[in-house]
Image (tube, rainbow, N blue to C red; front, side, top):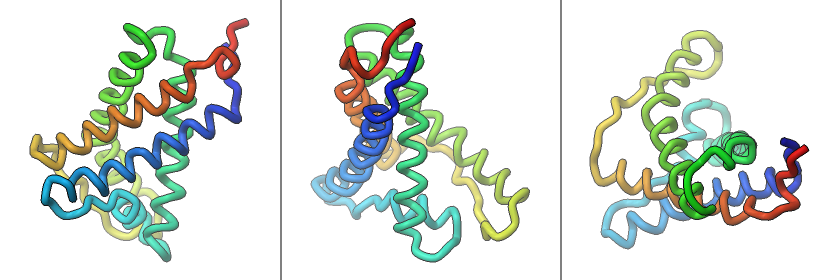
Length: 154
C-alpha cells in the first residue's frame, strides 16, 4: 500500500485542528473552562512559547496518526465513518493512557525538557470530552482520506 503524502499530511493537520477546536468550544458550551490542549502540549517541552511548541507537536502527532490510519484503514470494521470513530477511540485511549507515561520516561532521558509528571488516567467529564474530541479526529481523518487517490494498493 502506497501513501499519497499531500492529502495524508493535510488530513493529519486538519484532524489535529479539529481536536483543538473541539477542546476549546465544547467545554465552554458546557459551562466549563476551556481545555487548552495546544498550551498543555507545549508545556511538555518547556521551550519558549508553549503555543508554538504545542501546535508543532500536535501537527506532527496528527501527521503520524494519519499515516498509521492510511496504512490500517482497510483492517478497521465498517464504513469510513465507523472506521474513523474506531480509530479515534484507539488513538484517544493511547494518547490519554500510554502517551503521558512515554513522555514522562523521555523527560528522564532527554536533558532540557524540564520536569513532567504523568497524570494518572481517570474517567471524568474532561476525559469524556477528550475522547469525544478524538472521535472527531478520527472522523475528520476518515473524511479526508476516504478517496481513491489518497491510498493506492499495489
